[in-house]
Each structure stands twice: as C-alpha cells, then as structure tokens.
Image 1 (cartoon, helix red, strand yellow):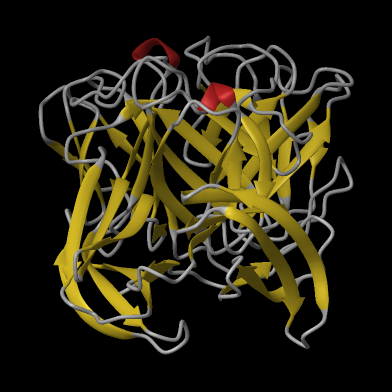
Image 2: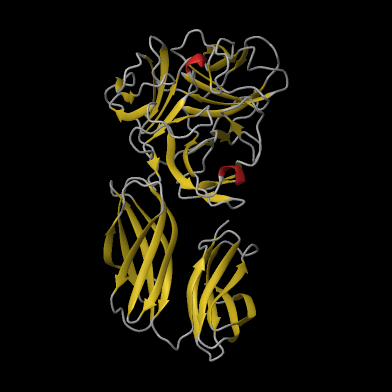
Length: 494
C-alpha cells in the first residue's frame, strides 16, 4: 500500500554479489485450512519472509536463496523443510498447509533486499575462519545465518563479543557460529561452516541504513523497563531482542500486534505479555520475562522503522437487492491502523463517486462484519467499489461488484478473482434458466473465447480458464436465451 521503490541483485554461493534503506512490510492473516493461501497487497516482491503463528506453533523464515517451497523452522534444529511456503510472488507470497491452519492468526514481516540489507548464501568448506566478502554495504553490523542441515540458526552483531551468536532455538551460544567481521563481509566460524552444507544469511549494515538500528542493553528483570539504545529519533515498528542461550530464544514484536503482545521466535508458544511491551523513541519497553530482560546480562535489540503496514485482509464484499435498496456487506479478517471505508458507486462501471463512509475498527485480529445501505439507486445495473483508508491517509481499493435492479434483466453479479493469473469464476443470476452463451473479446473486439452452458433459475457459477490468455484487459459477455447481454471487464496478469 505504502512503499519505496528500489533496485536489487541476487546473491550466489561464495562469489558474493547482491540484490538504500531497508524496505519491509508487516501484517497478519488468518488461515483458512486450504492447501494454499495467497498473501497479497505487498508493494514489492519479498526476498525474506518471517512468519510466527499465534498459538503453540513455531516461527519460520524463508529467503529467495532457498530452494522453492523450503523454509527454516526457528524453534528446532531441523533441516529446511517444505509445507510452509509454497511460493514467493510478485506483490506477496503463498503459504502451504503448515502455515494455513484454519482460524489461526499469523503475524509476518517481509523484507526486500537493498544495498544495506544483503540476503545471500554460501557453501561451507570446513575450513576455520572462511572469509565471505563482497557485500555491497561493506562490513555488516548484524548477521543472521540459517543452515540447510539440522543445525540451529544464529544471530550476532558487531557490538557482541565474542562473536559466537545467539542461537534462535535456545541451544549453546558459546560455539563459534561467527569468527570475525571482514572489511566487506564476514568470516564464518567452525559451527556454521560444515563441509558442503549450504547456509543462507541476512547481513545488515545498520550504520549506513536509516531504517535499521541495533544496540546493546542490560536487563534488570523489572517490569515496564525502557531500553533505548537505538537513538532518540528512531522509533521502531518492528523489533527483535536477543539474549544469551540460557535466558531464552529471541522475541519479536510488530506494530500489527496489540500493546504488550509479543512472541518468542524460537519457541512453539503463543502470545506473551511480558516480553516486548511497547515501542518508544529509541527502543522499546520490556516486561519481566528473562527472554528479553534477564538481570545483569548484555542483550541485543534490533529495530526497523518506516515500514509498510498492511492493514486489511478483506474476506468478502457482497451486494444484494433488497426491495428498492441495495444492501452492501463486507468482512475483514485482520486490520492494522485502518481508519474508515469509503463506498463508491457507478452506473457505467468506469466513473465512480462516493456515496458514504463507514468507520473501521482500527486494529483487529478477528473477523468483523460491516454493512451499508444504498437507498433507492434506481433501475438498471449498479457498480460498487470499496476503498479502505489508513489513519495516515494511505488507501487500498478492492474489487468491483454489481447489482441488477431490473427483475427481467439477466445480470453478471461478480467475476472473481479479477485480476487473475489463471482462472476466474463468473457469477450470474438467471430468471429463466436454459442455455446461455459466454464470449470473451479483447479490447479490439476480437473474440478469443466462447462457451455454451446450461443454467438453472437463480444464481449460477461458471469457471473460466485464462491460463493461455495474453496479459491484458478483456470483455466477458453473457447472453441469455431472450437475447439480453450482460458484460464485465476482466484483467489477465502474468
């Protein structure tokens, strides 16, 4: 919704090249139990995806250097596995069954690689102090390593000494995951450099990036402790804390989570209230949990600011004729920082004007249903759009739906999804049943598709494959037995 444009290159094993501030987005979604679920609305193609379910489920991460469909679980020493991520997509990502449990809320953060936020991989060679140089940002200050084998993931930063790393699964932090920083990269230690094993990593140069800050703080175990090592002018919207292994796994909080709520990334536990409590200028306030606030221990805080929040997951938007009025209803699964909805109306499907607004919930992690009545719009075909506005003025426009106010006119009520990459479903009402004809024309008028279908009186559904269609806009035409024709535009994307 809100975004920065940037350029990137990819990183490959040992010959390190890269895909200027950090660009990221955060949000949430609710699982529906299907084999896959697409998370959309992100203004860039994610290159690192971190997901933590609400409940007793472990967090996982995937990067664009991992094989398609693979992710690393942060709560165990298991090897990379499938079932969590199906694909990284333009403008989002698609999750699999293990990350789409019905009615489970998932919090996520996605990153785009920049010159100061390098995502890459290397193959271990079992040689002590192997140098991996060539980062475009020079020497990083933060490094996160994800092995493909059954070894835990580690995090370390320039302020930490020795550079042994925090182990995200809670294992021994005294091992040499990291040996030293080099001028333009890092030197892997013995633990994260096993022969022939592929290691994926995220390297961050916080000193050169206005949207990333890291620092050290000392815990004392007191509640509502304010720690501000990031600088007074830096208020994060995403924060991670790391302590030594005996204190607990790292913790995560994003601005999409309610106040006082946070998660332990390396533990299959639910929401906790005594980890990271709130964001403040220069850092965060902490609870009493030893995973974030152990007494007399040096801990790491990593913060990100100015990211994109993805405020609304719309699950339905419908319009129904009710006597001489139109009843509009819609439902959201999650909301972050949403302010209000604007209802747009048109009689030609192209020129829309506002007919009213409805206040939004603001922040929500459960299903919310809204309604609006358009009184006496008149006869004919009526088109409706829904626009959601954030508190800061950013907005997102949702799909167009149609209502027929004439009893004797055959009408298309919905075409979804639209735009589509593969298939779309045509919903329409029939007052007579019988044989109907569907044709699709490109904008020059050339017919590119036709079908003859049988219908029943009432609502009907017909699925259309557009897999072989060229990218562009098309007119879908529905002709009833009496000769009346309804039309709607569909957009094919690649």
